[in-house]
Image (cartoon, rainbow, N blue to C red; front, side, top):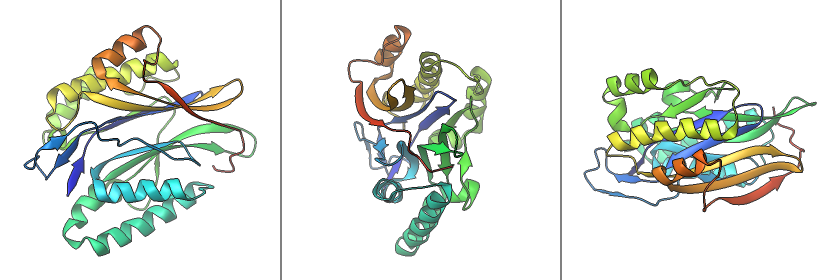
Length: 246
């Protein structure tokens, strides 16, 4: 079974971001080697973006299901997660622990009936049960690789080095902070690629833009410092304000 690794996310009133590495690790401790360039950031047509860390077969199934259904609200997400989780553990008895530990991160547009806003949420049976942890505005969340989780001191060093509650800030300042964090983690973890994929969800004058960019972390940092998204940036979709979610 393949193991996948690191996701960094952020949300505020104007946009949301999900950043994912693209390395697949074969085996619990990379004993089967690894492969870079594997797309783990998935475009969800009726939502935003999704990525995850943990057992890849389970994560792929969750993301496929999220992308296939017309998700109306957070209850729909939870029902889908519970269904896929139970079926996955029934069909993969030897990997129940890995399935429960896996984390899925997704972004979508919510609405309270008057305003439309960005949401980023995390699902993990071990960490949150059958509940959705919704990221607070202005907060950076990190799903750490296994070699960080097995050495909590490394996690604490990240928390001490970086401010993970950056508040309402502009897009390029948020991306810069996220790439700085990714740079440190990918430099110190054998399980994380130096390249990454970034899914943006942002308000523009004529709608909500879904934008994707990718590349080597050092090159992306240079582009972001120049307030550019990089040569690989592409507009994936423009969504009208018609969400009925919450």
